[in-house]
Length: 116
Image 1 (cartoon, rainbow, N blue to C red):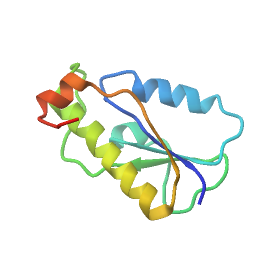
Image 2 (image 1 turned 90 degrees about the vertical axis):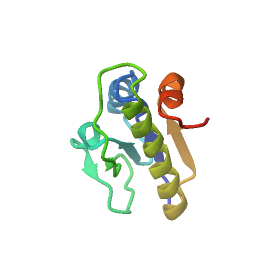
Image 3 (image 1 turned 180 degrees about the vertical axis):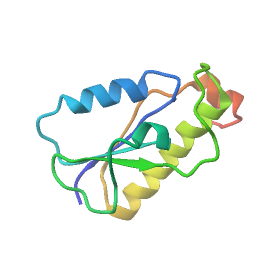
Image 4 (image 1 turned 135 degrees about the vertical axis):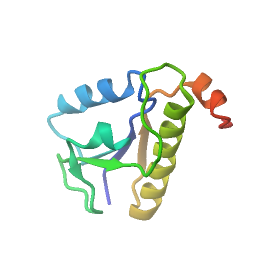
């Protein structure tokens, strides 16, 4: 299965906004799955396991955390980390060979005790 998996990075960072703007400029692509908090991917078609060319899908991660606008917030780091974990699992399950991550906060990861 072809396609590109993209994690949206730190919710308080530029990742979600820049990624959305960039992919909306694409005129042709193999299909894109965006991984992030439900708040950021709700406007995209839900991913159901089939990737179609030129379609952008949203894959809301399963998390109890809510995004914060505070830079380096541990909750945002956990959301970014869980997005990467979900994307890796999806790539393995659906044989997706391309994974891109938007920027994450190293300070946030440290505050959340996530080793990197």
